[in-house]
Image: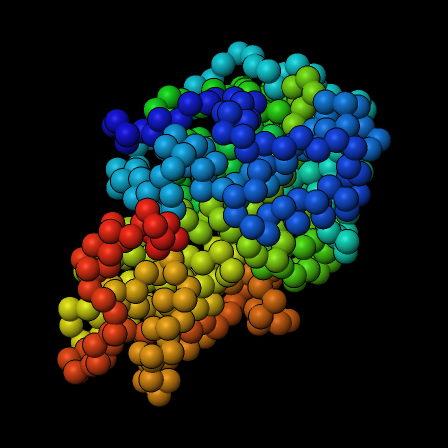
Length: 483
């Protein structure tokens, strides 16, 4: 990593696919139906880390070459490749690399170009037809077809000019209208509300197939006012090429597969949802949500929709977000002055948000609860959290057997468990406070460290150096011993 940039070797979704195919981690699926079949196949594949990405072609009712890519980020190897790391970096290597990058947050502004592959076909006016593309109905009780699951919503702040990219779901209503759901407090929602407060429609663009690096940064807690295009350019070490749209004035990725452009008018809503979300529930229900009046659609020849299927964890959302969120929380703990942090893990079973584990080397009384409280409330850990568990540095936070062992053997429920009410959540959280405060929840801090300053029994385990000696001596005859 030179100058903060990673060794990213692709510039668009097709380049990423070629690299991943070189790892043997792409499977082409022909003949699946967009209505439920495609989504169910994806869900079955994303239940276990490491299965290949799925490229659906010859989708029922659509021309050959109009494709949908799913299950993209359920492999450490693919996550590492996306960030320009060696495929064998592993989760801990990805966390370390992301922390090194975010310490400096090198950025490169996007570069405007006159044209790009996304302009191969452009629909405007009466020619706009969202139904021309194989948007899936992913889950059995979804309220419609969702073209935007792995997409990024592009908006510009009306006051500062800051361009934000956010991952928000986008539902197809009909040929020229789409619904966009953005949880309260998210950057995209704040921008919408600023336009509406001025009595103006909000220009909006939705890229639904693009460089996966844009999806990465669009789904993370990038600091307010920092442009995701700029962060992606900093990661790559080269600016993202964009086209300044003549329709909305927004910068759209020049090499995108498919971009929808339009306006969101104040007070214009349609019923949106239900939609199976990242905790595995249809928790948001069906309710009025903002409508995009689609003014233009531009796409490459034989476009690829990038799908990211939320479902019961683990899923395609939880693997990569959990890894990168772990790095961000770790950095924010250290920035807050918490010493002795040796590991952070945001477990995929909690959707990469709801179950956060922090390992520390205890230094003083109250150290564990201090670390847990900061982890629960820092920017990267505050949204839709449920449990924060703090463990000693002899516990691997990525190993749930170790974590549960610490919870069972080092927790006194009378003193080591605390509940915090009225915290920031989302209507997608099935335990958020209904009905009038659907963006708040309660959460739990569990101090699973040894009581500070008190004698505690020793662990009955061979010393680490002796274990390594035994592994080296016996691994040829007992290869499983090295796992």
